[in-house]
Image 1 (cartoon, helix red, strand yellow):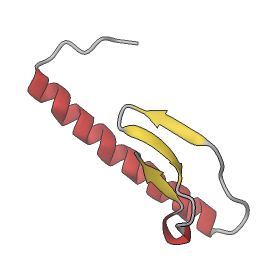
Image 2 (image 1 turned 135 degrees about the vertical axis):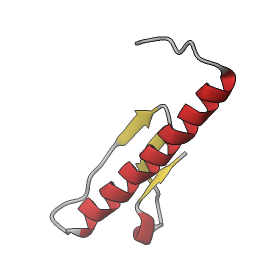
Image 3 (image 1 turned 90 degrees about the vertical axis):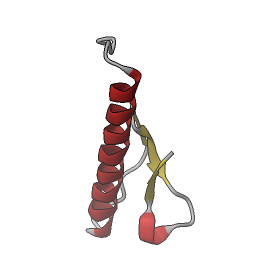
Image 4 (image 1 turned 90 degrees about the horizontal axis):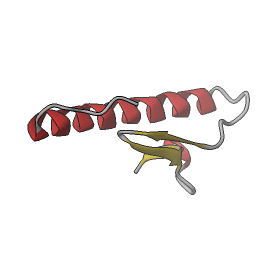
Length: 65
């Protein structure tokens, strides 16, 4: 793993970008589940947060926390 060496502002911007990308991944997992060929399982650990199944929320099966 490479250590970040930029400014705090740059770090915060990149964290925000990582969160946005993680939310896009969660949306893609929802779309895959909607195909009805089998549900994805597990969780993904990312710099933007943990992507995991949101129990009891069928319209949005995946969430980032």
